[in-house]
Image (tube, rainbow, N blue to C red; front, side):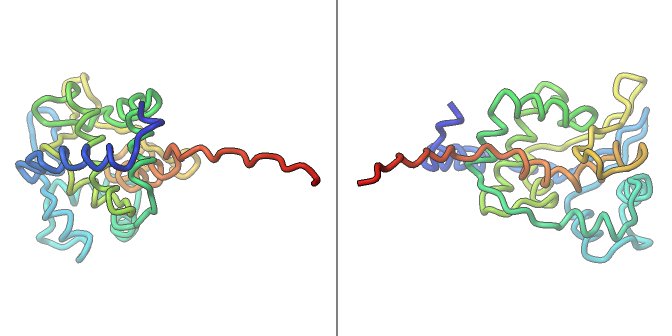
Length: 209
């Protein structure tokens, strides 16, 4: 179905998605480790991207940056980098079998706080599609459009707090290849690379007459 998706159908879907109460609690991530929970809001992330690490930086976010495998400046730059996308092509991918498998893989330890794995695919897909609507995709845009609070779970061996960073050949070591902020930095590029574009019909062969 999605291979035949039209701009009109997608526009209706986007209207439906945007009508949902986006970012109900304003929590990009609740860093859930054992019994401890640190909370980082989108406002905290915006402040970091603009000003860098400061004494007043949200503690969970500061620790996330320190454990990302990258410098604060690299994370700042990566979170706001823009990637050109076509929202129709993005939606085709994310609704395809390959796309659903990708979304499941990408929500290994990062998923909705309350519903957890039950709604992880739908929630992340919604955020990515809405963030792609104007043709430019960023990590910040995905964060801003999360429909519910998300958590990074590292609890009692059930979840280990690591993500499957989509950066083959571009990350090095456990932190760069598994940390949440590294995952966010590379996610838009991965979406851009996996868009399912329109098939171009072959031109008819003209005879020599």
